[in-house]
Image (tube, rainbow, N blue to C red):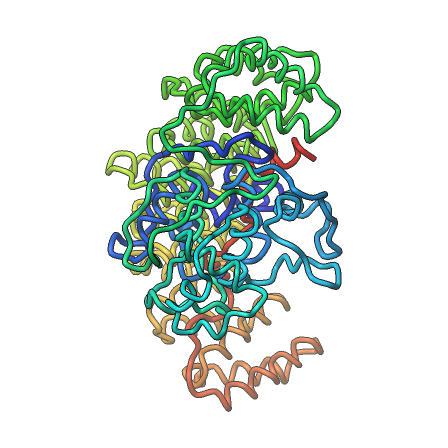
Length: 624
């Protein structure tokens, strides 16, 4: 879920995480309902967007998520591995065949468990060469066939009549026509912008997959229908009969039957089984019975077996808010020796309606005392809380007892909260001041995390410009580049401080970083040429190389520096530097147009990172 060294090998991704699964993994006697969560807003999914309601509904239910910068990127494609993760989380069905190992899916790959499950449940298969194609984009046809087959859907309507609605029906391969006809009859298909055009071979966008998945949940009576002009409706959908091995969805109003207490006891006993499938089925059946099963599950949390405690914690987490009666026991197991138990207990406590101050204290304690899954889950929960969590995170940054990792996480989370939540003026000012003060921390990694998070606030972090400028000028530990990048993100308000840094710094690297930011903001070569020439003449070999690189990016606007470049080539005895300057001369004599940047700063664009949340990772380890 994350993608910066703060969280293993990845950087923290808030509730808007890249499209991924929910908590649920395993078997169930009936597919449980999708529980509504808090509304999730994405800056690039306006209310007028064709799939807005689909995206907001599944994001609110934690079936899908977005990106660190608060976007959803609805038009982006999705890989087969990511789609397997969606299937695994959205449809906790029984397996219909033995799991299979694919040659291109490493055992430690984040989606290995989801891919194995999607295969065993009959949703997806691999290729004849034994591969799964985990990084291959998935087509609309594949999405529809996977859902139709995996859910065991059937139709009694005439296939030719159903397919006649599509103007491009000739593009549907013969082997898939039956599945597409069934998907049409069961109203799984959503076609935008032309409701009568299937586009079967086109790679499915994230928005399209969300819409189709939501319709599959509607078909399973786990979600309320959304009115859309792009939903393909042909006649009255047939209900059909689920195939063997696929649980019946029942009727919308039919309550889940409540087994007697002794039957709960039998299910709880199965949580200790050495058979993984039995444990999964028992945990899911207990979860499906909701509040009634909580007392027995709370007792199971006190088992001597870590395996039993983990399965019980999983079931309670699935029950969510209705597991409130187990709160005292869940708090006790935060000290459990098993990381999975602690992780699942932390996730459940974030759902059961604890007093917010108490919950924030629990989560910030996890930030300081844990690492790995528990810390990641606590981090996500704090981002979900939003601006109210910022003061507590500020206390972590001020704490003398908090370690470097905890402070780095806290600094990063403040930036992530700003991206995920609309902070009020007071909370905003407080967050920026906390991060600005953290730029004085004795640990360079903490300072770097604080500088990076300030950049996440953009122009709203203008009060931190002096502190960032000080970090740019005086820090030789690598923080200076991050400070320059954040000043660049703040924008034109940073120009005076960047100019001062360029002219007054004794750190050649700081001068070069300031020059790059200034060029990007002003495109005024007269501001930066003197500093580039100075570094070219007096810096060490590495900084001279960077200065020469920066000059080449200026193109013809760097012509006044040609004498200095020629002088460097003539008088230097460093062959590497001579080669660089020759290349610089060649480029300067041939390049007319300047580049947007000097190529010295690396301000990353938001990327889709590891798309598996920490909770899904915890569950996948539980059932391995």
